[in-house]
Length: 360
Image (cartoon, rainbow, N blue to C red):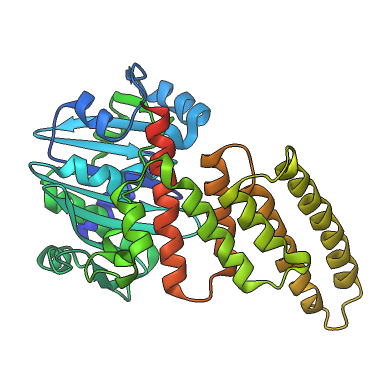
């Protein structure tokens, strides 16, 4: 067994979480400052022993972040979380230095990212190491060769070698002693919002970002743009589904111009909810009678039902909730990758507005 695999085997034997974990190295030894960049709730920090950590992990799950200093560096481990690998966290952690993070879970959802002075320079998927993105995708190529991390390796080898990559970047080795030591624990109960525009859409720049309506929304991500976002999400469903009785147009009219008479908005919501229930019943009956055995005949009905839910939620009383729900549902009606990316950006805008409203 080579040294990298041997060290990983020692970590696993000492209790390192193999099924899901996020480990982040950042060149900052101020634990409170690092906790702040993770978005930790104020006053939640405390030191915990190994026995106490087991209870905290079971009680708090993905909210828990465990911090340890090593020289000039801090190592953050999230046994059930993934905050460290998000650019909203990693980029601030790297300001004035650098930060590296790796995440994986049991379904092999994973991400590896390296940031320098406030910007992710390279990131990749452990299942496709050769395809890297960022402002400088080749930034870690030398160290990747050094630790032997490349496509073609089995899963456990990729895990062992990506941790070795973090060690090579930082000069700080993960050991059983580190794993068993007391940790400074914090809770992330209100995660930081994602950047409005994912880095992958900036280099090269996605043309839709400069469309007048999108540019205006991105220029001022405030509650004033929530209605515009909701209407855009509704338009996806209206374009994709032929709804009887002009339900889509009626919904857009109420959103844009308000009620013609008191109670019209709630009456329309009730009508949409009733039609959705009827459509669901028709879809279930059609699926039960399906001749294909796959229920394909019911798919148009399920899509209609999803569109009716979107319209109903778009008319909800909370502008933030209405926009967030409508954008999430609109993904069911995207015809192109550009549309999916457009909705992702709009979702990030809604998330940022909601976060700002919670933190005036």
